[in-house]
Length: 279
Length: 155
Image (cartoon, rainbow over all chains, first blue to last red; front, side, top):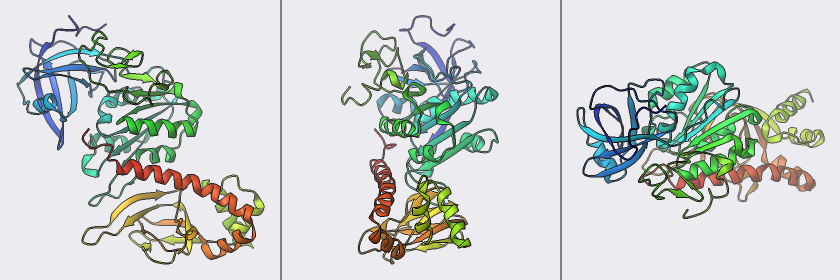
């Protein structure tokens, strides 16, 4: 039961509890309701509409732990007017929040399977809640592999998390960069290379994929080539959104709305429209 | 013979040669040698004679490009179960990049002159080898294109 939504179109005031710079253009904010504490429940992969007063609204996925309803955590890349404004926020500032909205990563349906998480750049943020969930219920899954790609070593998001996941004995995590710089001694190359190096049972694997659309396109091809079928691949789509409840049509994606039917889609359900240009 | 049998087994276990028939495997093994290279050591440099190609058994090799006045640019890394070095197939048979071991790396090298001779006299072996090389080259080309477009850059 969603307790956070009163009227889905009316933003609720939230206060910035903490601000953390992650990368040169990426930051994480932790929010708490301005009118006292209230639990905020969400599912991994869902998003909120964040309203920078006087500037505008943007859809941003949650990046925190879904098991902790006391925090609303968002990791944001500043790429436009609204996100630039959000980047200027500091502890104690207020913003409006509507949500949570959208579909989620099928973490429960993936139980009993190997789980492959393929992600790149800021795409790790919407997947981090799913990773938290899976690690909390680790015994319910087969092999768990995370493959993450970044532009350079300096652009690796959540480096401490990745190092901690890589250090665990019950999962596999690997990171590659498109351009090796400095004293980087890890893999250099595209993230799809990591998929082919991973050791998992493709016929009993569920894959979650999130990143730039072209990265997802090639990741799906690579997964298909290894034998992972489209009904076991899930991707998170990104489109401009306005209402977030499937009314305005702004985020229409073929016969679906990304805000309401997505952002997480089972790939076989969108495979025909996924490659269509200008959709 | 014992040595060739051992190398033949190593080759047969490598993903690149998976499924190759025994007779062809034995011919290829005749051109093979075991190699080991220490960390931070160059295996070859751009412009040198491309007299071998390599299968990685264990370790990591960085394929680098030398840019005057800058640190070497790592184009990609090659890992266990992968191959590198296609210049042996293309005249004038010279390396087009540097290869450096990132860590202690064990390889099987295949002598290019030996292989070219065998392919010349056995075209079906050449076809088999090419049909293994071309998917690797296509993957590398696709990967290079993806790296080139800077997909994680600002939208």
